Length: 306
Image 1 (cartoon, helix red, strand yellow):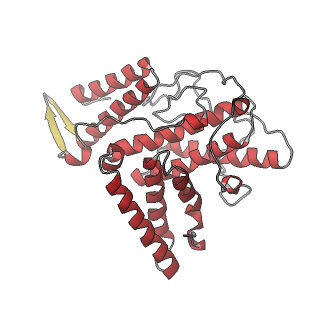
Image 2 (tube, rainbow, N blue to C red):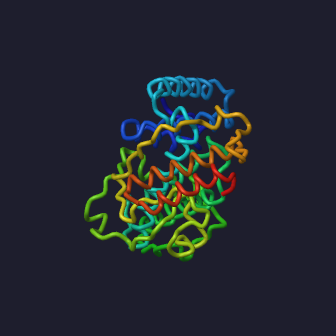
Image 3 (tube, rainbow, N blue to C red):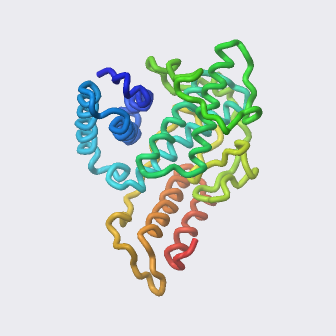
């Protein structure tokens, strides 16, 4: 079913959902949820839009039933971490290719899709300042490199010359149409250049960002949860298995007593996130990051302070 013109702003999010239908149903589900929520705000009154949104709601209900045993669907804190980790892996792959001077279609698409998935994070609440800047940089980079290659120019690698006070709009200069027809994230060894950009250590869930240079994206800091290997290829971006959490913030009272420490629902949510980041880090055998986040969770649960 074609996307009505009034809902054009979410067409690329819906295309991303379609591309991930089998690869990662969780990503597909939340992309459609974002499109439905945004579409309701854009136009829910005209007949064609109402018909489209009702069909989208039915599709979401069907997916929710099929994925009813998946923690990323049933628990928002897990779903949030899943989408954020996926977006960051795509971003880091594209950024490494960019910094190594390897400009190609797959890396542009990875930048652009990462920006779309950062849009999707808004279904869980307001975006962090880090993710807002991250999204601006990814969308700007996609437009900038796409236009350079289109005009036969050589792009500048890295954040040099980028104006982060502006954000490339989906309809100005770059709309993602270059990837609208069956585009894939498969990267050949030639595209990947055989060598990764210099590795940079990340501390997941750390407010200070990278554990290497103070900032690797100019004014754009890596949001918590970024710890993909520096040479992560785009087709290796797979869902991070999620461990079943023992308690969900929504199921907890406003505060619980833990020894002499009174913990709020927000404290439990933060502790869950630290544990989730630790679990994700272990997928990459990143023991220091896992230990760091488990220590943060333990400190929060035992002292009530971060």
